[in-house]
Length: 302
Image (tube, rainbow, N blue to C red):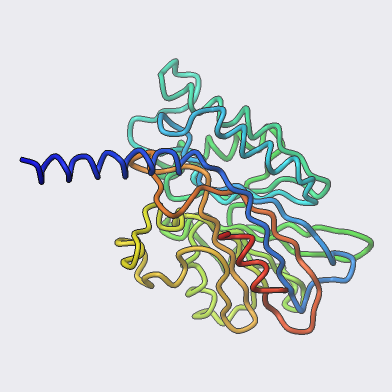
């Protein structure tokens, strides 16, 4: 009996710590060097919010906190990398008067406050599709209506002082509608290419297709959400294991950044993996990679 009570007590403490961690929102700052970055974009600051999972587990004021953290940094560009909604079969199109409509509406309303000189762009995640393509289309439509352009297997050239950076976005990697080659149509092969993909496993497709992408910005993994001492994260929905769990990943000349995200899934708990929003600063350099790597890692995880 004493052992059982001790175990229950330990679990209660862990759950409380996990809940508190799930509300301990961090700002992650990372500096990245890219060889193909045009000189006029040197020092470009990109704000990222991902994996909001709007629903009962993620209150409105927490989404607002993430928006305010990003806006306080005055980034040049803002990107949203999917899982806006905590999708399930019970979520319906807005204006249906349901409880879940409330979560949908306040997520859209809070994100509408985002603005940046080069614009606000996004892509859809797997949870945005999990209530069906009709809801995914509705999310994209409603975000577009408040000034957030959702890229669906397409690209947009961002211009500054006569030079271009090509921002590319794809539908979620697990969806039939995902089409990287379509997204890359018309994008100059010698241009600077930044890809928004909810799922970082897209890196494997990029390599298989032998396409050059300079930077991939993703979410999806929640950084593991629950990371245990010694063991690490016990389960990650990726055939590539821990390779793209979180942070910075380098693959040849390609750099990937995977945010731990703002929300939570299944339970409002995070252990050793606090939620975050991120600011990436891009610099032009001869060799791709992280500038001041130790500094960047300390900023991310310290």
